[in-house]
Length: 184
Image (cartoon, rainbow, N blue to C red; front, side):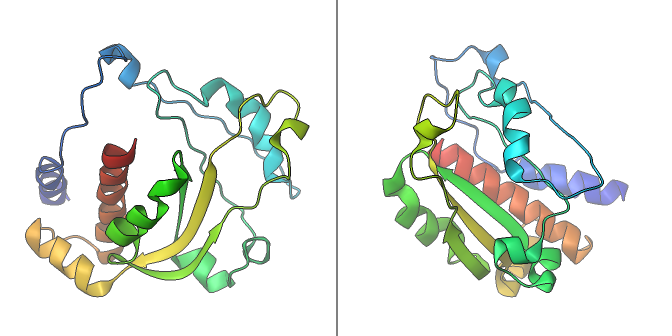
């Protein structure tokens, strides 16, 4: 395992540095927020909204994210197999015009896409109390890394010793990093 950690760190050292933005102080670049709740009955995703308000903007202009478990395949329009095995990749489009470029550069060539859709929204965001700014559109992809792409990634980064799922996790991490670096 020690060797794998070194290999991952080495592969991440090749990632481009985020662009410097003098608008934000360096100490504002960090800062992560976590919200969690647990229950023994199904709840709607809207219930995570209120506790997440505190971290919607961590001070660096990059927003925040939510991780979820207990999702229901039928609510997302996919099979249980896809829900269990695919990565659920959701991307907020701060600029709607970048979706085509995003998909041509980072989604279509790298991933086998089992489902892609725009996340449904309310008709008028102002109907939600306290929501003063229209949220960005969000696109949702259920994906797996194409086998030949993953193989090339492993070879290029000397990660052949990694378990394939861990290697795919690392590919997802590095692709997400590159997307954020380019579009945010």
